Image (tube, rainbow over the protein chains, first blue to last red):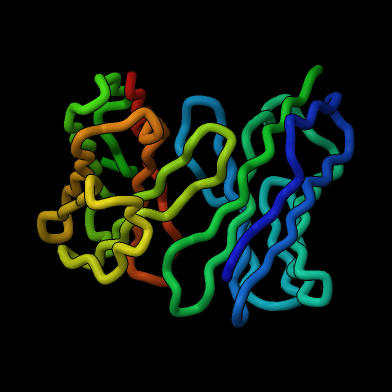
Length: 112
Length: 113
């Protein structure tokens, strides 16, 4: 079956620190991979995505590279800001299989 | 509206009561999804609509759960005889088509006492 495992939080970092949130997946076929972000009081928003191996998704200073050999899609940002405090969800979707499969989410708190 | 909206934002109910949750998708989006997020868990897929038909109901946890959609518009998720384990945030998402980006609503937080 399809599943996503991401590092458990909460993660607390100081402003300008480097961020990594690990995500690994199990899937049949060749899934697309996503990172969603949920800011306090808001709905889930797509942060970035990658649709095939070695693709790099990037947005708002965040990056993640689709690594087929390690079945991973780790989220990174070089210098976090307080405004990045949110819950981050890794997800996959198999081609032809519409529902997204989500990880449990990782709460990030960035302190000034 | 500009985004997916859901109502109510919060619902507290007593065990055994029925509840209805509403989702208004983005205008023109033919695909609509319901997910559930229980405390400490990831989002679980419940049901998918394409137009007003539901080709994938595989995530509905029991026959107490049902959903319908009017045309390519509003959807309601109904939970009958609620149980405490139904307490969760219920999220709705819509997309232009089955393979397009899903846009999420803010969710309905359901608490069953």
